[in-house]
Length: 209
Image (tube, rainbow, N blue to C red; front, side, top):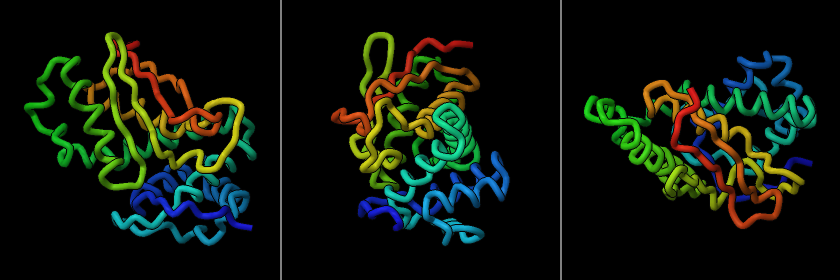
C-alpha cells in the first residue's frame, strides 16, 4: 500500500532536486531500491517536473526518509539524508536567494551577525511561501531557533528520536551560503515524530570553523 497522503505539498522542483541529489549520492540502483521501499516506484526515471507547482505530497517525502533508514540503518540513513539535504540547497535553493533579498552585493558585505539575522528568516520564508511547510525563526542570545510547525519529513511518523536529518543538512548548507563559507552547529532539539508540538533546530551563532 502506498503511504496515506497528507494533502500538504512541496513544489515539484524541491522534490526533483532532492531525488537527483539522492541519485548522485547512492547511484541509480540505490535510488531505485529506495523508491521501491518507499512504494514510490512510479518515480523511477520519472521525477517531478522542474516547476514550482505544489504537487509532491509530504507523505511521499516522509516515505523517502523512512526508506533511507530502513535500507541503510539509522546511522547510514542519517548520513545520506544530511548529504542529500546539503546537496539540495547547494543545487537549487540558493537560486532563491535573489527572491529572498540575500543574493545581492549589499547583503554580501554585511557583518556576519547581520547576515544570519537576515538570511535565516529569508530561508524560512522561501519554504513558507513556496510549500505547505510552515517555518519560522526566533532569535535568542547565542542562538537561533528554526521551527517547523508543519513538517514534510516526519508526516504521521513515530520515532524515539528526532529524525528530520534532511532539513538539518539543508540548514547547514544554507548557513554556509548565507555566511559566505562558514560552518555552523545545527542541532535537532525537538521533532513532531517524537511527540513534540513542533520541530525545532537550534543554530548556534558562533561558527565552528
